[in-house]
Image 1 (cartoon, one colour):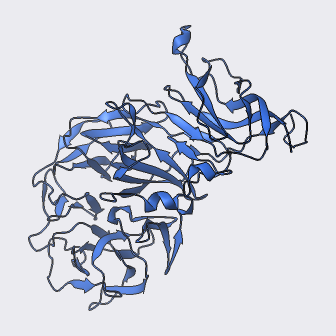
Image 2 (cartoon, one colour; image 1 turned 120 degrees about the horizontal axis):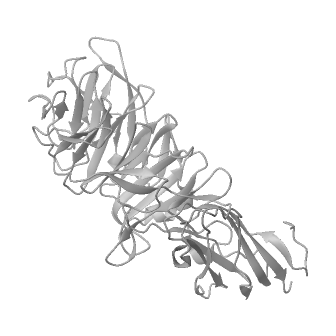
Image 3 (cartoon, rainbow, N blue to C red; image 1 turned 90 degrees about the vertical axis):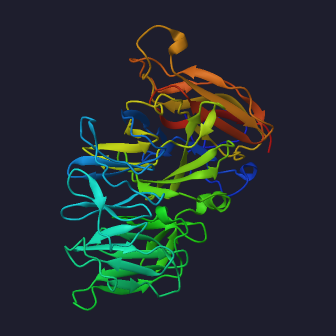
Length: 478
């Protein structure tokens, strides 16, 4: 097979799938970048891998949203109904609720040397024994709390102030132990402590960095401030690679000192058109050696006419993709069901409605619901007026059932949009049962056109490792 191109000859050529997804223009004018990657991500080998599915770990927690953290070797789960639970490795659930969480916001956790502190917009709660209780009557009501160098720090919502306790004295909050993040007049909406022991305080118009300062009169010192803030408070995320968040220009930005670096140029138009950023959140979600960040806008409208837009960012390569759940009523994609992500015991857990699920590549369904892998190309015109006599897809095979019921064998589907006149009917080929290890699947002739758009999908509960595609193409004219 040749990957080159010579006129007036039918030959095999690579079809361009190894480009970044681009959704910052009308799809009809897209000629190079991939148009859609759903429930998948671009892997390091240049192909596409299906994102792991979800299996149930614990149920019966109640509520619609579950938030998580790790504490003393267990999972701690907090629901939007204010209940707090401890869950051990075997899935045994213990209700730890004494004083319920209140405030109606997303739960933010901060671990000190001997307790877990929680903020959800109401009074700060602590968990150090068997039941949650109020941290201190004098502690501020807050949406965000963090721990650094012995200090607990909490922002005062709708102001530029943040409060702190003296080191180790977590139940004593002096009204005078307060700082104003006043580099720029801006109400604080979020707070995070980076792995490098930096405090970042953000409002919609600015971000300020503070560090602890060994001085009895001044425990914190401001290092710098930026002119770009955080628009969606719970998208502020800090890990070893940097600090990220949705800024006031609706960019997913990386904050590097006093500079912001846009990570979302390829999806900028999509972000500008998000109709509801309420409750948007972000979390680190590295899996199978891939360094990923998950960003969810749970109330935003999506391309399928349902609510919920969830995206994955490979931040090393600035490659984006989509995650979708499934609407059983309308039989179409909807919000991916997770509300939080936590790594523990070498496993990845996802907070879902009424419980916790486990992210696993042993299943490619979402709690028993469909989870279609789908990729869609640009309208490729590099071959000019041409005829495609055969299409060969390279993909991992042999993940199907052992029985001989051909109706149950997992299949891969492909359809073609020639000259943007609309997609043909799906063509299906078997993905094979165990033992069928050949990787090539041929779909045959797909006709003639000036531009070619392909869509490939797998809906069955089977692993997908898509490597690439070749076409046997002949140019018809110059």
